[in-house]
Length: 324
Image (cartoon, rainbow, N blue to C red; front, side, top):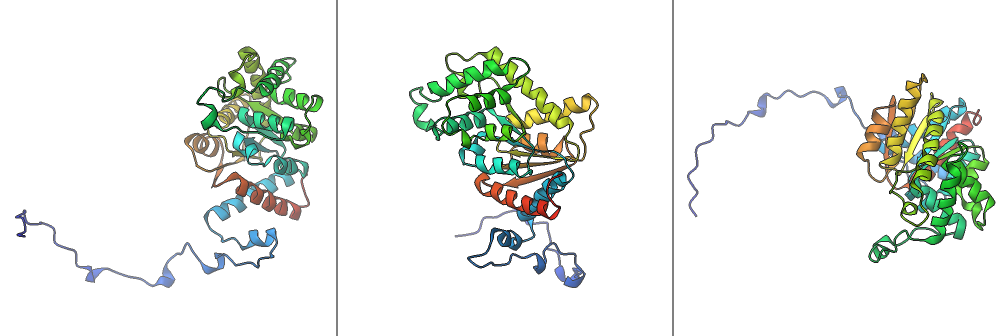
């Protein structure tokens, strides 16, 4: 086949003979063998495994966050965890309750989904439905028992400055919940943590059932917004970790910081982190970038990241003699 006639090129290839080089020993390097991973034996301890991780990227971010948490607790500062529903669904409630009991975490903020899953676990030891199947005929979210529980909780939470988180803990403590020992909300409250629940109307299944009272829902969660603002007003030198909430809690966190600073609270020296399977816009901007001096992003599955973070933070806190 004859080649087509095209205009001649006007570019002459550069002659590389004049390129200057320099010694590899003069170059600044980002990677050194001292930071490589070390293989551990099959019977190695979890601590030995953590020590063997390479000194790069996510492994270093994990250590950095663990160090921030340990430093804050050793100094008597708050460590606040914000939780999306998936964190409870993958069975991390007992682990988070343990972190509170050991003094590693001081306070919790949940979105509505996390509160619902925690309540259903306390009620029957199970939670989470097959949405793809139940959305077809409109059964999705229409569970009578869960709706009845939250109708009571919303009404009680709107009264006497109680708030949604406190009302839910009282419901779980006083009602017929055979598996209440598995409830993160109840256990955290019993241990003295401040527990708040934050919802946007229409975002949760219990808003779409008979007995749902929008006024009570709004009043109860607004009390918790003000309560969380008080926690964040005292967050100077502390840590906020957003785990699995892509929209609601990052927005609530940003507004609470604004309210606290508007009222004269410094809220400085805060380390914020976002742990999720994807790094979304709002956590990145409203948790890690805008309101704090230091932001740490860790991308991965909660059921793997959180146990590793817990252990590494506890090890570092123990070296400091425990929480103050």
